[in-house]
Image 1 (cartoon, rainbow, N blue to C red):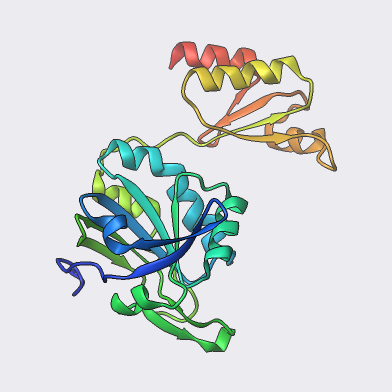
Image 2: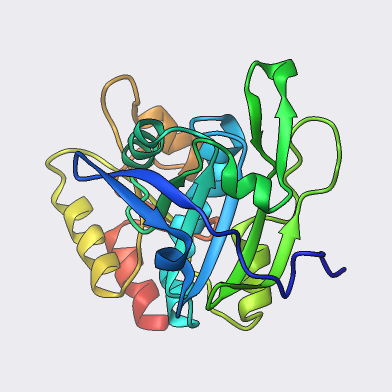
Length: 244
């Protein structure tokens, strides 16, 4: 379904942002002119869906988007500059440009400013994503008008399917490790050498081998999982890469 804003230029707004501890004005032209940009907008920094899924997945897929012609990924919310910068640091979202639409001007110009007084939020952006080429909106994915905070179509995977449905997504890799474990270091080197990003779960501080045993059936570390499949320890991982 075509959205009325598709084919239209983005609103011309000057955002008051913070960069490296200083104030900086950023215009719509600076963000979008001469570039291919994905913008995803959300109700608020530090809110559950935004922090657990929306922002992290765009950050995770940023290299794939760039390999497919996207110059920048912008996250916009009706929050102030301090909140947006702190949220970016907290989420370690180094691949995302965060933009504070503090006065709601851009969201209003998009027709996406909504009233969330019932939550004590005031006016915020509706959740959506869009692909913008040289300042003109090519495609929008707008969440359906349902109660609460629907999250069905503005996600990173939906956008990637539009940009290139054949794009290769990175594998989901998790490994259990323990401080000082040489086999764990070896497993991490193997993953890095083969271009795999990973999440590391280090035992200690209340996390015991019980967690490893429950997940893998073994109390030994490392234990590597790729896309939900147990690979095993460093030797198993080496054999797996040899067969891949």
